[in-house]
Image (cartoon, rainbow, N blue to C red; front, side, top):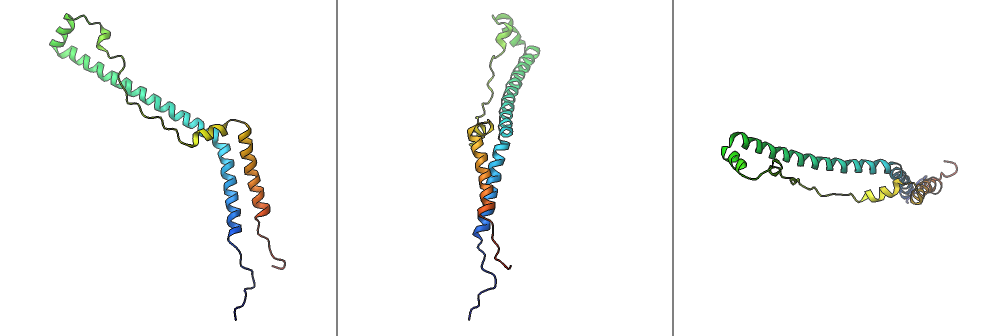
Length: 149
């Protein structure tokens, strides 16, 4: 009553495993080859963040100096207190104006990429694993054709 099809039913698992192995192999190879650049990029981001904090600190010092300048020009009471007091010009400046400290956020993958960016045993093993996955995909997970098809 039921006729079996002329072609045997193909399983979706073998092609899926093949492509997953290739994608995993490519991801491993990409992580090893891109690791030094990503680590350098992250270091540059941290340096940029540090410079931005310094810039905010300097801008706040400039604002403070502008207030002192304005007070010296337009406030006679301030000039009188300054003349009567034992102030030196350095006393008018706050030595350390607080800048907002932004938290240092290190993504989870940066320590892993730092280890991969240095030529060593772990890097070599990841590359061998990527090559092994690629060879395994093409040798063991290839679809075989039936004779006569």
